[in-house]
Amino acid sequence: MLDLKDFEYDELVEYLTGIGEKKFRAEQIFSWLHKGVTSYDEMTNISAKTKEKLMRDTYVSTLSIREKYVSKLDGTVKYLFELPDKNCIESVVMRYHHGLTICISSQVGCRMGCRFCASTIGGLYRSLTAGEILNQVIFAQKDLGERISNIVLMGIGEPLDNFDNVVKFLHNVNHEKGLNIGYRHITLSTCGVVPRIYELAKCNLPITLTISLHAPNDAIRDTIMPVNHKYKIDELIKACHNYVDTTGRRISFEYSLISGVNDGEAQAHELARLIKPIHAHVNLIPVNNVEEREFHKGTKEEIQKFKDTLVGLGINATIRRELGADISASCGQLRKKVL
Ligand code: SAH
Image 1 (cartoon, rainbow, N blue to C red):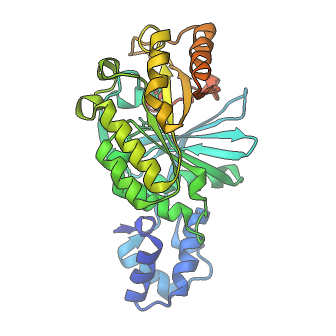
Image 2 (spheres, rainbow, N blue to C red):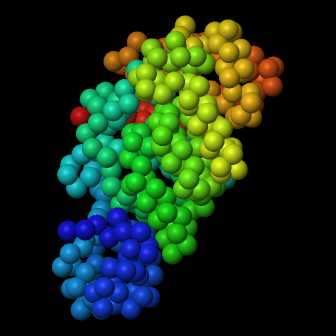
Image 3 (spheres, protein in one colour):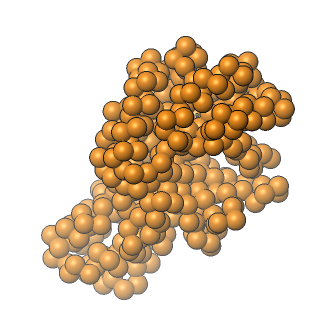
């Protein structure tokens, strides 16, 4: 059985015309799917005969809310969604002045092994389908009754390790007959799977790409991010230049500040030298303490000093505001706790 949400719009048209339906049915069905219907019964403008045909080889996938937490501090909503195979993933909805942003997962678990990250404990279980990635947006929006206007692929998993499904999802979520979320409102975060960054550049989607850099040199990056054994920083930076040149879009960097590991004055200088030619923005994230990990954040003053050094060297840097601190809203923490 095929999940209708794994079809791109054109594939849906092809499938429907193939079973003797008119083209406009695709528009109707695509639109129902993105409104969050949970069965064919709810598609009131589709005839029983058509539904019968559809049900022969397709189904409407759903995602159930296993747990939901709302932050009393800032209204951040965290979902633990249960997939049909009982696996769980996390999605977080954050309230910003420009609207609701959802942070979604791309895999169940992760095999990238970043030492400070909770999502990677236990490794990769499986990748999500395009429909499962999309369902997080659809069912969070349905549950909240408010439009979600921005998406960040920064939840559990490495999006570029699930490349085809992620790209399919991007096409569908952007489609005008579906949720119609503009590419410019979508950010994809990667730990640096270099060949896939080139591939993504070729797709020419005007999304924002952000790179989890977390270290200014290979010596440090090797110790905290195993992906760096495969793709060194200079290769990563080359891929970033190619991405910027090909797409005309800017790149940004994420840099988790880990006390005593990557947050010294010398590292700030090294980081500035490294990324200055890319004119990229740096998002500084005070590392979240994960129980099983030995990493800790520095003091407020140390974090501020790192930022000031970067800014003094002409780098556009900001410290990420922590949202949902009371509901363990950072990725991987909730799934791990429940499991
Ligand atoms: N796999 C993708 C997206 C998922 S993580 C990536 O690596 O970019 C989203 C961001 O949170 C990444 O920058 C990741 O390195 C960072 N992160 C993970 N665990 C963290 C922690 N304990 N503290 C701070 N940032 C963390």
